[in-house]
Amino acid sequence: MKLDSAPLEIFGKAQTDIELELKHSNDFSLTPAIAQPVQPVVAESRQKQESVLVVFGTTFVTIFLAEIGDKTQLSTLLMSAQSHSPWVVFIGSAAALITTSLLGVLLGSWISSRLSPKTVEKSAGVMLLVISLMLFWDVFTSH
Image (cartoon, rainbow, N blue to C red; front, side, top):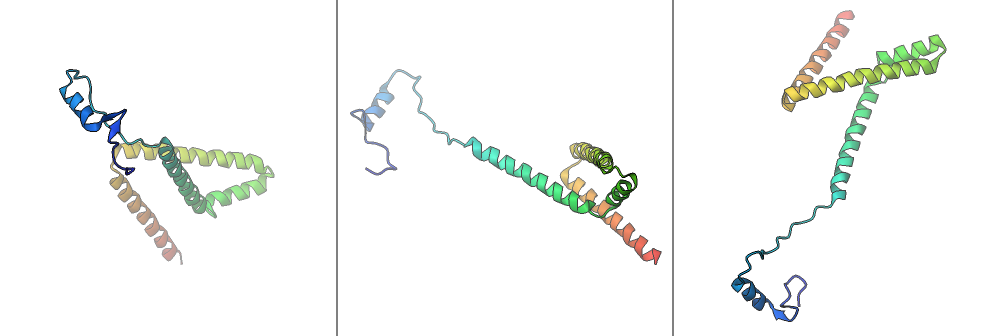
């Protein structure tokens, strides 16, 4: 007997006998069972978990690299050196960065509920392009 074929006998009855009994039966409550493939829950939660980690990692690296050497970091460095209270400056600057990030997330969430992702993406690209052009213009006109 091959493993992928149906058994020819079930409890001593041939498959054709069972089919005939079902066909001539007056009990219409018998319905054939439909096999549904079972999706493992672990695979879905693992995929969600990976996507959350990817989003977190991408966000962290992007913001971390964007903030290195910017005005905020230099201001924090100078305030820490001047005040001689580095932990107070750290808590104040961390609270400020968390607040501005929260505002960005809330505003982004609100905008994404009103506009299509393509429109948001194009708008962000145009804004970054305009900011870049303004920075280039400032550099060229200051010399």
